[in-house]
Image 1 (tube, rainbow, N blue to C red):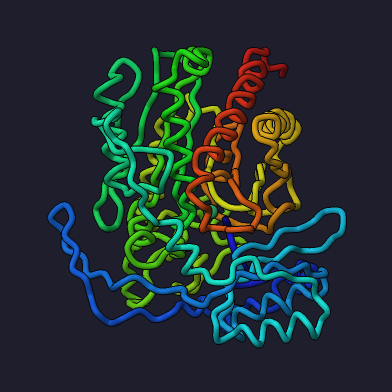
Image 2 (image 1 turned 90 degrees about the vertical axis):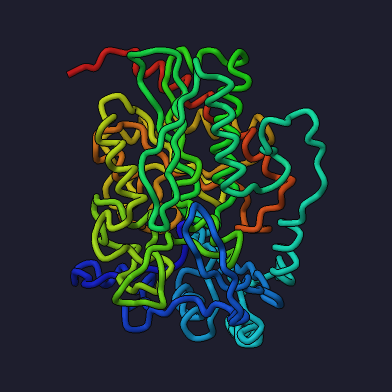
Length: 463
Ligand SMILES: [Zn+2]
């Protein structure tokens, strides 16, 4: 999910009036990070790959509630300002095109609950409490049932729980070893904490157009990693089922584009979003929003220059080794790659470029829309799940420096940003029972998408 509010350094005056309502509460001076709960000062020493990490004990979200509220456009600044005033975090803010209302998901610490309820009643907002205690939801999510592993001794991967990076890496290695004619595993770079950025290439031969898929760019969006791996699983372990997918395309899949952040969400703060890079100018605020760090229209809206913000764009475009690695790979393969799919969560939206603005549409917008319509229809046919389709900035809000916009700027014609399940019942804490259905329906959508794109690529380009 590309969350919350935005800050910009300067607003052109002609835009000011229109943006004022949306961004009223977000000038850099007032931008404050979500008041994270404090954790015990005790430190755990973690050893990994010969590196030492001092990691605090896990943060508790005990007593935190998730509220959903319907908000008239004119009241958006009031609800937005709750994050600064009361330490609330806006998890999601979705626009309803028909009613012109916004649906807000608000994570509310116990200290702010009274104020939030007061605002709801003062402005007569319709709302409901969808999660009564976030920590209980987190505990349920991570509960490790016993699995029978006798039938798959070679790797620990399942679709029944959220796995560690280590498990995911083992699974990718397993696929590379077991299906060497199909899968090769590439290390395309390293993270700030020196974890490898692993990419799986699935290919049956040369001279094919390719699709690139990124997952896990936002650390807390766990289902995006599992979905990327599920797609890999279906392509490789069930390759005979849909041979056309491999006959026609090469597949590049990076399931964990932000491995440091992901491990941090597993060990310390379940709601961490950014990378974990160290910023000497703000030693207590780690990380950059990787999906605001790509170097196309960087920092032109929907991102922050405050290092503590969860949508911090970084000190410069491509300041993060994770985004640089993807950039370099894309540049190297930009003539081959025709499709870019960025997997995020949540909201169930299939979004088209551009993210940075809703004012301008790409030249091939109609093409993008038509192939995407096939995809969301196939998803709906598969499981009944509904994905909304439209421009990113139209469905949510502008966000600059995203991987999808960058890919499109390189000349990759079909770039999409998909927000997976759900629509705010659980938000980021999606129960593990939904891992497989989320992967399954996305794979069905992808099949329809690639069929449609294949047909379009066959047609000669009219000049
Ligand atoms: Zn995201």
